[in-house]
Image (cartoon, rainbow, N blue to C red):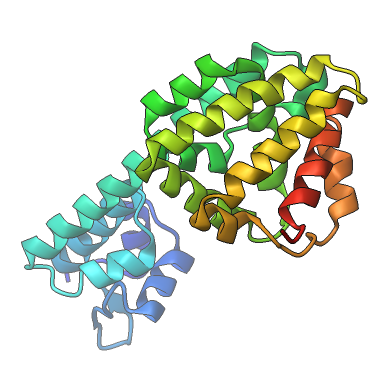
Length: 268
């Protein structure tokens, strides 16, 4: 008996509560110890070692389910190592995510917070675009037409924040196509530079319609792009979407958008 503890003393020695110990027994994390002739639980070195390991693993961030699975065989050092490696990966991913969030917050703090709703808080679409095309192509995009690059970031942020439809799948397919056909990507950047210049034109400038027609002709001349972008049903909540987009695009650019959609959906 001198090497055994009753549950109250076991709780004090391990810095645990009675409720916690009983719960561990209930879920099978801590096996029931021997009992005294009077029916009292008696805890010894085995239970102390088990509780010590449970507390250490909890302090590392493991949940009770994982601890129970891992301690199914206390002698299996491989299981312990694999569990710790898995936990390490999770924590490193959390650190990376936190660092990215801090970086986005710092970027926002450098801007006018009065227009926070127009800023890009890490658009998943642009992250996907960077992953597919590569940082060099994105930098080229930013250099070729910086105004449009900024606008597109804001537009993609609007698209990402709401469920407007399957545009993300189309956007990904488009990015993959341009990666495989850099000459067409360059042509699209040239159209983009012209689109950016529309921001400074009046709504009745003939360049708006010229650009819309030429852009539609380019898209229709490539079967893959035509299949992706032409003759598509009008998106649900199109009016609301246009209302959001009009906060980013100029009136001339909005007119171009409407004309381009018209020409893409018109029959030859």
